[in-house]
Length: 114
Length: 110
Image (cartoon, rainbow over the protein chains, first blue to last red):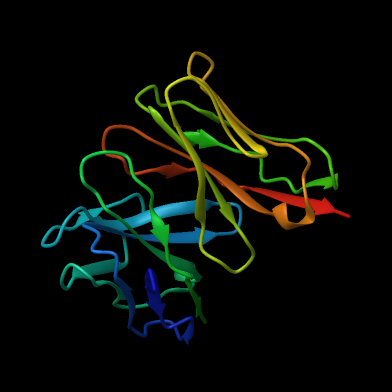
């Protein structure tokens, strides 16, 4: 049982390049989330998917797109990377059955945009 | 003003000390209150959660919520070097999507 996995672990991009961060969970969870974490800023929600087939914007969606490929996978795409997107990106999932339950986080992707 | 305020620290204490970590919030709709622990270069993991005002104890950890003051606390008794981590408070309303504080860095030195 791997939980939440993210690839890649590290990435360096040049300004203007594009890339997709991958996330997968094997817990049969309905809801999945993408956060970014910057020094002194805590975790900020980029996008989330409450259930397969739905996606919604979070607090900081500009410059990002997401795809809920299936129940297991939720990807985050940067179409034209900017230095302001240098951050650590975390994917999370939860059962999402209409009551409070635990969010499980992946190990993170450290992205640097030069 | 951010919805959730948390002092980033760092907070440095000797082993065995009682640690108090705190957050304040402004959104009256918050009804679920959580504490996450994050070790360096790892993802956060849920430590405790509470619903409404009151105390909840789990081993050396006690979570306290005062909704009238919009103030939550996490107490760690007999702190250990292995407790050194960043502690993030989080809270949510009916959507169950948490809003996180900035996190407090805790260092417990032997």
